[in-house]
Each structure stands twice: as C-alpha cells, then as structure tokens.
Length: 209
Ligand code: SF4
Image (cartoon, rainbow, N blue to C red; front, side):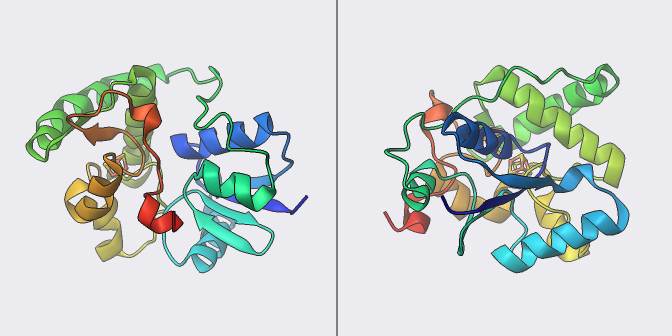
C-alpha cells in the first residue's frame, strides 16, 4: 500500500475524522499534530505542510506522490485502492472531554458568534458535541494566540493572512463555504442544513467529480 502521511491539528475535527477513517480501513499512516508542537518544531512542520499544499488549510494528506487538502473519503478510497469510501464520514471516538477552565469563554463565544453567523445565512452545526468541541478549540486558540483563530487552519504568522482565519471567517471564504454549505471546520452550516454529516468538506468542483 502507498505511504500515507498527514499533517493535522489536534483541534481540527476533520483531522480526527480522517484519522478515524484510516484506522477503520486498516490503513497505516504517520501524522503530525502541528498545533501540539511549539517553537521551532511547529514552524518546521507548518512550513512543510504549507510547501506541500500551497496554503494554510488543514488537514494536508499525502498518499504516495499525491497530495490533497481536506478530508475527502472518495479521493482517499481511490488513491488507496479501497473497495469503497464505505463509512463515509465517521464520527471520532468519544475520547474528547471538555476543559472546564475554557467553558466560560466557549459559552461567551457561542453567544457572540450566533448573531454574526445568522446574519450571514449560517447557523451552528446541529451536531452538538461537534459544536462544543470546535468552539472550545477556538477558545483555546484565543488563549494561545490572543485571537480566536480557526482550529482547522495553520496560523501563518502574516497579519494579513491570519486576519482571514479569525472565527467566524465566513465573509472571507464565502464562495468556498457556500459551495459546501458549511464552513471549513464544520462549526457553521447553511441555515437550511439538517444533516451536516452528509456534507463534504471538499466541494465537488475541487475533487474533479
Ligand atoms: S467559521 Fe472559519 S474560523 Fe470559524 S470554525 Fe469555521 S472555518 Fe474555522
């Protein structure tokens, strides 16, 4: 089987689903959680992922010589020669426990983001645990970086670029998100979405299908 290496963030839900997908298909892989590193180690891995993908989105998936950004089960099935994408979009294990010290800020962000998202035609994902997890990661980023940066993107270090990943970043990526009916992380979905699990992270026009 082809060698699989993935650049992920621990705080990124799509990254957790990707790992779960690979495990359920018995695909061996190596990975690095960039947001679990610090200092020079983080910069080195961030730069590698950026060079490979040409952007700052996470996850970056390398299968043999092919590279894909985002969790795309259909592409993975094809690239890895799996019988089919099968489980589609698995839900990660129930291993996440919220951090009580971040709970007050998480709730404050929820109240702050709700009207902003609604004004843009979006709402929080109805997947409650997913929303909870992602909001906590945004709150965590706020304590680390001083800004509520996106959990599913890399902080580039460029002020101009990083302003585009302050949550909710919908206005900066409107066209992209509208084509998927969800934001990149899945914290927000279009107001008419009832089943977010059916939505793909990578829009069809980008998969070539
Ligand atoms: S709105 Fe943007 S910054 Fe916020 S969670 Fe979604 S993709 Fe990340």
